[in-house]
Length: 75
Image 1 (cartoon, helix red, strand yellow):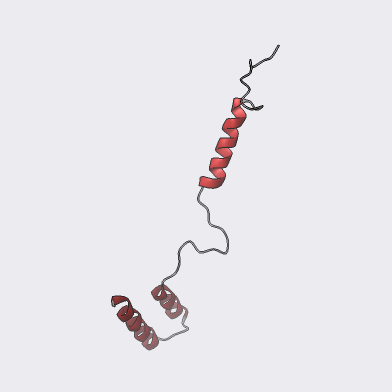
Image 2 (cartoon, rainbow, N blue to C red; image 1 turned 180 degrees about the horizontal axis):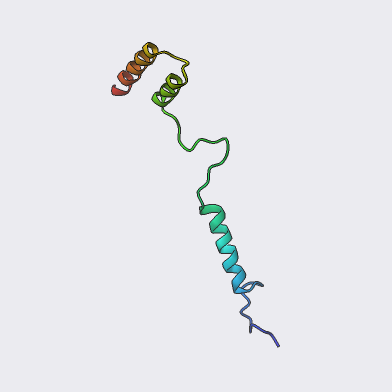
């Protein structure tokens, strides 16, 4: 005598379909950062600010390059 009368959900119990659905949702829909990849691309102004904050350029160079970047973005 067959236990499920032909309704065996493709060889798996219904609970296992539910478990697989939750697992796949968790794997593909959960946001996470992959090491080595940036979440957004840095703008040239962001890079310039970071270089100024680290001390690799001085205030005069920062202001000159910032002015150039702002002039180019206005065009």
